[in-house]
Image (cartoon, rainbow, N blue to C red; front, side):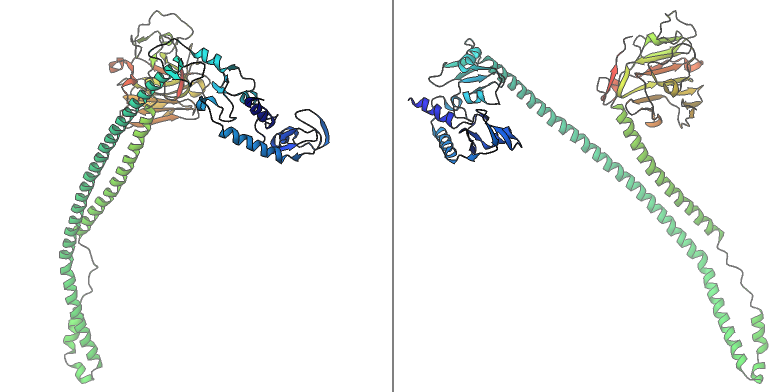
Length: 536
């Protein structure tokens, strides 16, 4: 028998018919077949009776098997022989590392050479398999100087395979590698630049707080010097009175001692000089109540007022600094979701004149001859913006300038365009308004007055669709103005604008600010949201 046939027979005798691997703890059944212990456990499960042999299907009334240690030893020897057998001229690519069998087949699904045992295993069962020679023929291409030549061992079907696919992938990987190196260099440069900026900001902060510290320290020295001057004034003003009181007390102590001594003397001695002593005692007057010098009290009161003002000023300074920092942070975070908004001419009231770039709108008494399409407002001077928003966060800014009457915000795309329109949340509007240059209102139901310290010139609008919030910001002052919370949006939401003419500076247009100039603008619709474009 040829050595190859013997090897194949040994392989078959030491291979489990279930897992097609070398036996692991082979168990002999009553029918004489051997199965791996783990394979029997999977086949039989928890059954104790009427079990069958996985190979011949013979049924046994009870679960009975015994370890075949002799076969286990033989299997171990065969595995050792396979391991020690030279791999031959084919090298590692010519022998299956798992089964130590020649790689004669090619699995198209897994794109790898396999042996005949792999082909019968569960891992490759049902896969499309070709003889290795056919697979190699499929990869063979014409000889090109730019292709990669894969040398195979002597005795293999081909001496040189021109694998264009591998070459292309190598070129692709090299290009990606070069790009990764560039990106890494760009990242390192960006890191260095950003760290340089943070260092500059760190130095600015240290310098500003040092200046603030020196300024406060100088005020501290001045106040403490004023206190020392006040202490000296108190000493100079009150010390004279205290010295006089001390002299008076000494004189009274002497007079009291004399009277007490006279009181103890006999009658003859008592009558001597008693008149003079009593006369001196009668001349002593009860002192007036102590009165602090009014000028000192006034100076202390003024200083106390200064200290109180200092306390309040430092408290207000700290609170304002913290509040301004938070407001700046809040506004900057909103601006990260900047979008470019334009006006939709199909929705504009006929008295509203839109600019060519669809970013400005002004009111005119002369109505344009426009078609009364379903999208157009026909009673109030309103116009909607594009795009529509159906999710996410979005921010844009509107320059209202000195206009005396306007309303801006958002509304649902489904709001009524014909007839009277009441801008309120229950009607699908979330907006703020200025009336005749005097009163700012949030159009809640009922309306909410907005007591602003400074007039609005540029308004930021931040829509958080998923959270149901619409926030308004005074961009000039970098502070928050108002937020509609717990809004329920029923479908797409659009920017909303309304204005009317009231003379003077109010004739100026209302302007949608281009957001590409805002730091952090990403150039697309929102950073974390979705929009639905509407074509003008």
